[in-house]
Length: 472
Image (cartoon, rainbow, N blue to C red; front, side):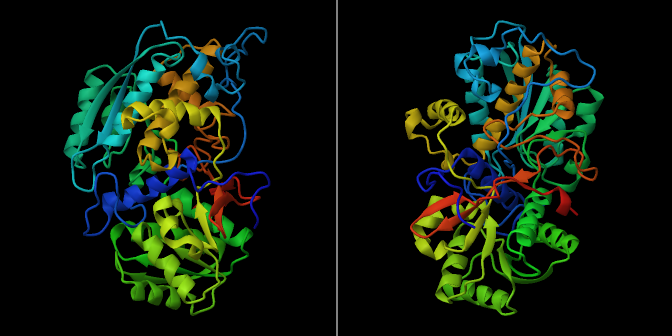
């Protein structure tokens, strides 16, 4: 259970991967949670509602610029854009790429803003800043980007209106930030492919789309993999709030536990409890002497459950989401977090990708790049991963001598081995790897643990945990 050797502390700044997974989980609670309304940057205090992701970020492999079936291999003597940039990794090639000079590619963006509990402008702002950056660094396969934005408010009517507006403007590809009701039928009829941040409602899992993260179905299945194969659990306790968001997370977790044959008992509390209330929840969940506990609380609930477990002297290990690994939580609880494992969190390592992220986000935040804290990007981190992944795919296609269009990028994403989600070393893309969840393209997660003294480090052997075997 020790950390991987040579890994650095992440208390001062976890990677974008950790942030992306945690905020994705928080988001769905905000979209479908209980009566409390979260602020624009603080989703409701439970887990994903409706579906889940984490995108997740999976295991250390370098993407290979391979071609889809039926294409000719490029001339091995040719110099690729990545090689010209001095990097073998196309995800790191952007800084040395020249401004694009080809025909513009028009990308549409649908995102939810302006509704209490459903206000995520950081996704649009960070994508727009990334587009500005890309238009100075290679564009998408040498094509400059024109971005068409359309805002929805969480209603089917606005989602339909945006689909009609964007297809009417002739976009080649639609990026879905957060949209509860994407109008897939309109996009399909217009021949416009859709690539999204994460699926939210069940219909997204089987939609004609590709998602770079997988939501509840993948997050909790990976957690059950860890429960069974790392902790050896045969019986677990679950603490959870009782609202639609947390209940959706619990349903996904329970389904994965049932598939694994692990017995489970759930104890439910309020969205916000007193210290005594959190102690009571932890006491009851531990009363059956389970091998492992799961906590579906977030934000203040992270603090309450961590303190409650420690004050009662409970030593049963706990798995929770990356939300609870945030500095705003750990600075409050300190070593009360010993024994807690976090989904989707890994040790921060200084990489070219992190430097790119900081350069893109700095203008949005009005700070110097070195001042950008990757753990505080909120849902904007998911938007960055989306557009920079698309650009990276386009660059690899151009390097292979292939035509770069919205449709060809969508096809490439679904047919090419070795691709990864941008900004990750281990976010391998495997679109359609699960027949029951054909739109999901990423299935692996890192897991980290809190160590006495304040470090949160990747657990050795859990750098890339698959959810596939445990998805219900």
